[in-house]
Image 1 (cartoon, rainbow, N blue to C red):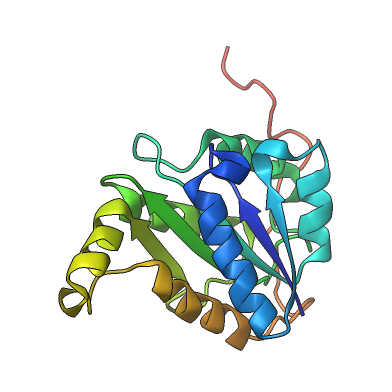
Image 2 (cartoon, one colour):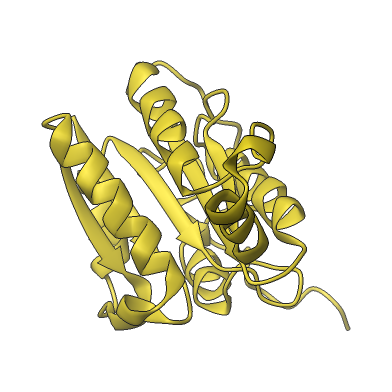
Length: 188
């Protein structure tokens, strides 16, 4: 089993998304699971495609930027459009972890899960977590109030569920996708 952790945060290896990615690394290493972290900000062209092809399971980590996931990840999805529903994605279990300085991260989580579903990924139950500055501050000051507040410690559950789901390559069917003309101009 191999897991690719994609740090899509704009802060790269110095941002909050890297802290979450390193937390994932620690949890996966403790379980003896092979994994790699790809920092999207530092990746060379083709690095993400190659890493996606190698991985059996995926973890995407992004910050929240004006109500959306990172522009780095948006650009990557646009460039990876020809691979939609291919073996790069189809049936691969995915977890999504979103950080937020303030608000809006839950809608980012749902939107990112939706994009990954459309690419062909399998979203296991309880495999998405929002880690917010406010939530982490509340956990530090009043943990007794946090039974229903997501935080960094909930990443362990998301990863457990990611690993619990079987990866069954070749078992899913994709609908037809236009891989040649998707970027053509169609308005005159």
